[in-house]
Length: 70
Image: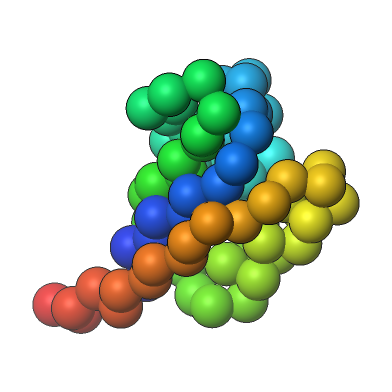
């Protein structure tokens, strides 16, 4: 499992959360969107990044951390 945080320039409405694997969508300011949450693996992260590319949104940062398994 990966804990991720993706920052991008532009706005994504919360209704798109399902298209982004159920990630939480927040807007700290009118020109920025942050996607946060957990994804099963790195290939799921690449899928999210692919969706962002298809929408023409600019990534400003991507942070992922592997979560410890019990």
